Every structure is written in C-alpha cells, then in structure tokens.
Image (cartoon, rainbow, N blue to C red; front, side, top):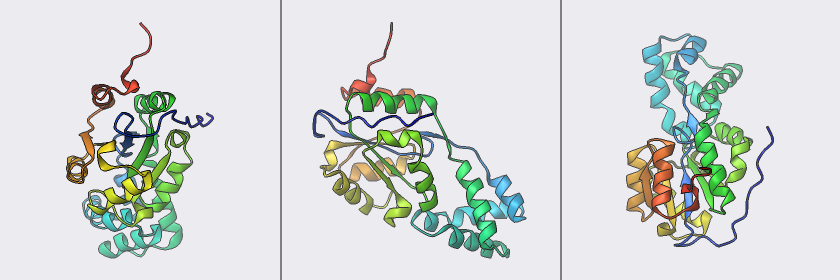
Length: 220
C-alpha cells in the first residue's frame, strides 16, 4: 500500500479553518493487550508484570529509552533485562498499537482532501514514534508530535504550549480529540477546543458540528 500524498490547504488555519489535532492510541489505533505475551517473554507472573509495566510507563512516554524502560520493569520484578531482550520486548509492545481503525483513517483522508490542517499529539515512546512516522497514514499530518521526543506528556499543562507553538496557532484555533477525559480537560484549561473521543462516528459528528467538510458523507 503506497502512502497517500499530503494535501496542502488552500486556506491558512484560523477560526474558520481550525487545526484538528488527533490523539493516536484508541483513536486512530486498535489496541491489543500484549501484556500476557510480554510477561511470558520476560518470564514473570502476569499480575506483578502488569504492575511493573504500568509503574514505569510514565517515564517511558516522557523519553526513557527502550533499554532503560525494560530494565526498570525488570528491576521491579528482580529480573535482569539485557539489550537483546529489551529489543524483543519493545517489538511486542509496539505491536499492541500498530493496527489502525479503517474508519478513522478514512476520516483522516476526508479531512486532508478538504484541506483541513491536521496534527497528531500522542503519548508514545521514542521508538514507537519512529515506527508511526513511517506508516502511510502519517502523511496526512502536517505535524506529528510524540511525548517521548518532547520530554513531556499529556496531560502536562506545558505540552499545550509546545503544541500551539509548533503549529503557530492560538489555542482557540485548535480542536483536540482524545479518548482520555483527563487529556481533554487539560486541553480545555489551556484554551483549546477539545472533545472526548468515543468512536469515529462521534468524532465525525464533532467535526460536522463545527462545519468542517469532513462531516459531509459521500454517496446517496
């Protein structure tokens, strides 16, 4: 499958043409729980592995390397993790987020075709960010921002300033879509328009309500 060509907008972003900023996980992606596979590979019981996996995730999302993250998980479990094992664990972990929702990608295609400026803001480790940038859907976005590369993550208040600076936009000229309510609330406190994403149909409805062309349904 060839990558879709990025479409340049004919109008500059602004109140009539806001930036639409997507989250990735559980918005564009279909998540698969791979923690049982990870626990089996690292040879740890599932429950304590899940606790360790979650406890170190914040640092991973904020820029810790793959090796540092998995060694921290291993330390909590009393298990030594070397670089080859960390590489295998990372590949499995990444696979949990690698599938996209066809209807969400279709929405991106629709928005880009109508010149709507798109950006992505995702909490994701640096290695995940590299993999996501290489995917065909990424070509629809003018800006791709990942927490692991920024050194901060949603819902950190500072991240919204980084976002709007990168977009050269006022907060009110950005519509942010995320599946986590705490991220939505943080964005609103920073002055962004923001909506809680539950599914693609609802997401498209939010865009339609703002008069964006992505809400126009094709065909009879």
